[in-house]
Length: 268
Image (cartoon, rainbow, N blue to C red; front, side, top):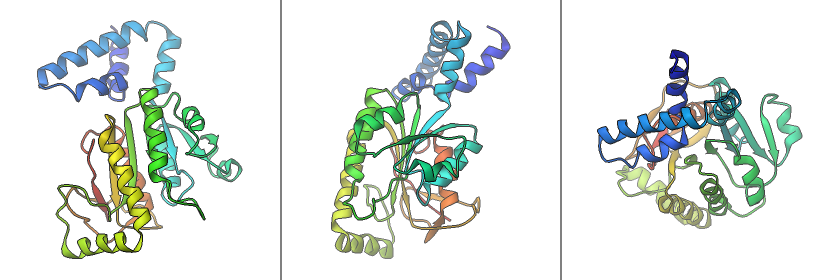
């Protein structure tokens, strides 16, 4: 194998769903190393023997799907993804408005509650990022959307799913301060329907076999990225976070195993 091909294999294997699917299930470092060698051999023999195969593989490993890309945080996710060199496909109900901002984005028109639209959106992607919010004048759709997302991801063998939620969602292992505990309780009292749907969404993730990350946020504000993001698995580390910093964090999670199947808090 040439040095160039080895470099290509090393770079793109990091995002390979084949490698990513199995390595997390190994029980020892030796097993992981053995599987990595087997996976690279498989990729080379089955895919890279033709120039066309190499191009198709590279494109798939570099394409992500974004849901909620026109929202408060989602548009920054799209920008940061493009800056990081990813190909981006976005779901939106208003393509004309979105095209005015992003000329290099593949846009899919439709609703996240339509499974066929989700299949079109996810086809050929290796990661899904959702910053989905509540549609105006409609009921909460977090759990129904998540059900569709997970169903199609399983069909297409896509493993990596990154989604944002609120800091008011409690999970086992949290060590929230008294004030943050009271804040979460107030949300359950004031917004019971939203919180029930949020917990239903989380339970769907917990019951899945995907490599998800459930990112919990404090108050989101508009502003330029500070580059300073506090992270915690126990408590909300701050009162607010800039939407551009959220985007930075989410894009970094695509290739990071640190918070797989975990629910980190982030804040500035």
